[in-house]
Length: 287
Image (cartoon, rainbow, N blue to C red; front, side):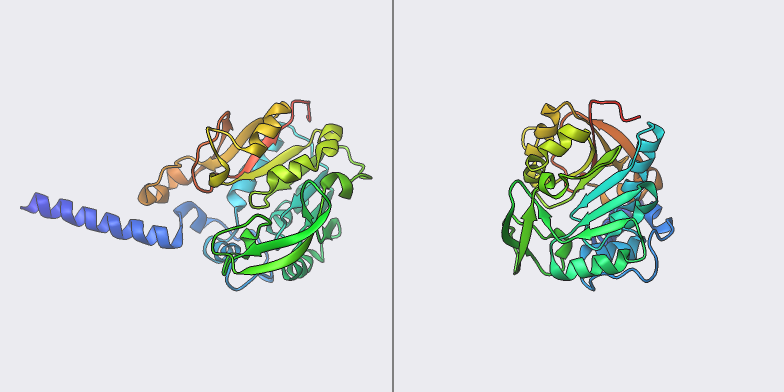
């Protein structure tokens, strides 16, 4: 009887902890981490990025830190950074000391104003009010309540807001760019493939390191359009991710499972938020 009661209590406590972890999406490693951003950083009241900043002290900062360490350890030279889908500037702010020049691209009106406020005291950051794609057009971007950071040109379920935005190709925006080494980040909600098609000249000219987000819904048969596009160009892939990538929320809480590691990627797994900072490395020598 006691044994059965102990098992019952363990399962009950396990479910409570797993439930709380699912609500707050916390892990002990992130709770202990120091804040990665200044206290006067401006953000939306209700948004996923704001939640991460308040609860975890940063937004994807552990992945960025691991990715940057990987580039440094492999002697990858950094000069110019193009941040596509800059949102309120958390990525560019975090990486500000690693690049000589940073271009932040953000098309939404209010988000662009917040981006400028968050970067106004950083001289080598320049903000450009554009979305990026494979053609120069005006179109609409949509997003849902409490998820402005997930705004997309492509149709999304539960979207209730729309805004007209101007789209440019990266080749058009940076046709006069001059730099020694280029790094491009594409976090534009399932529009990365279109942005890559609009950057063919830039990719051919500079063979940039590309930091890519790939959403679960894009993955089919171990690949995605943007993954195959770069794979065909000879790129290889390395992903900063937690050591444990399973679904058990309690296991995710264990410090050893929260450690960020870099895994080589030859095929994609359809796991939610697994590829938020995928490092795409060109075949040429950047060291």
